[in-house]
Length: 341
Image (cartoon, rainbow, N blue to C red; front, side, top):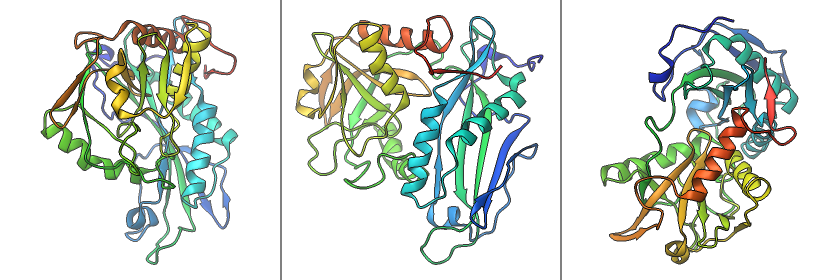
């Protein structure tokens, strides 16, 4: 398929409407067959469950053009499984994992002209999501739902390269014990907006959330998991029941151990030990890894030895290896790459 005439190397990380999106409706206890549609707009009742009680879950993933010209996506089975857990937690019907992957494949194929070419630095962002659509005025789950997938081409998250960012210890809590921090629900992101805007107004790029129970342990940011590199090059990531199980973070830990031969550890990370790490990064779908150069705790600065100029050496190796796998430059573990066409 001929590519759209887009200035691929200069598009930003923002929404651009593409030609097709996938839609499936849940009614009378079952999902319909689903179809691709042209209309990007959604019409629903003013009392829809999603509008009244934020009953919505979503996923985020990307499609890439590899070095040999294939269009692929990265570990969609994990996105499908995570959406199942998110839906269960919000009392929503499960969209079957095999159908999730099929919907992603169909949507990307239908918008193949928008998948950026290899080497452009851009990718096709894929957003599967589900929400309650029928009127709900009492506090209860909706009876009818819609599952959709749309795509949008996006430029590199860091145009011109990833520079280390400065983050602050947040005064807000991201998630409560036994709450919804471990699922990808819209409500988690809504409550993080004030915290991130407060950080920006104070001159910081992101927040570091501590656990709400004791405020002694590192959790995550509003939309990414932490990874730390110890001075002996061990890769450490926080463990908590209120952290979203990032697919990127899990992949990075595998790459660290099996491709780079590094020791890895998932455990409680106490804030008072952050000063002892050599490198720090935030990991997620959008940027893969965002290097952190400095953490500020109410005026007290923690500066990592890796500095504010570039990624630390271990973080850079992790980034290069994982993106090399995604782009087809490095052989992937079995099942990691789903070839779309």
